[in-house]
Length: 295
Image 1 (cartoon, rainbow, N blue to C red):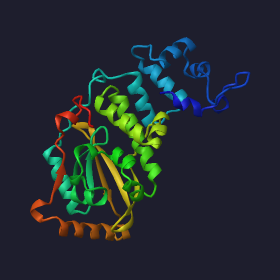
Image 2 (image 1 turned 45 degrees about the vertical axis):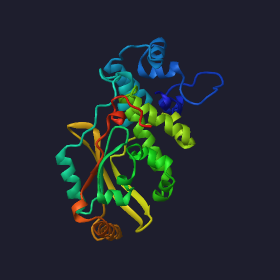
Image 3 (image 1 turned 180 degrees about the horizontal axis):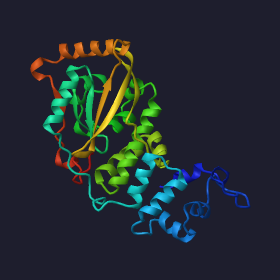
């Protein structure tokens, strides 16, 4: 929770270094407590989770002292001030009919799009997203998870030219979810599986970094259309804040737009019109966030 402390030095924050040889880099407890205006004893109890609920003012003071960014602070606040339902699993995820219609309309506009659940489960998608990222229809419910695809599917290392950045972002997103639902067996099972089978995941998960990218550029090295650079945006659903709508778009008259148009034409040829539309996973009870193990 306080991994950011290791990135700060006394001279960085205007503190006079404590005499003596430091065994590790970063601030000592008494230095961080001083920055936050707390006693060392109270800060130690907060760090060790022995304070039942930390006040808003102390959370904000520690956030400033640790120089947390927006996403790190949100994660820190979830840990320091767990919501009343934090010990319960994430609610069962259901996709609104209007959102499915939106996904299909995106496909008609040559915009790949899908909806993610709290643990990066792919809950719904349009055909163009399946053609760009993965054939979700052919995957089992367990396999329809972006973190699992990135770390355990060998094809992902070819699909994403900057695989490490994509993988680290997935880890950061799962860390945010862990702050919200730390006791959810569904998340615990997923993290356990990835830790066992991926040394990269195991190392980065131990780093406690949190991150959530809501927009930017994403590159793909697609096996049929080659390199394609797209703009992505993600939006939290207001009536289901655990769900995120992710869209990819190309600039007008760009090579990426031409590539997307080609990909869309292949989708139309490969998928009969009566079968074309939005794929979705109606999450079965055993993997729905009601306590079941996804494996």
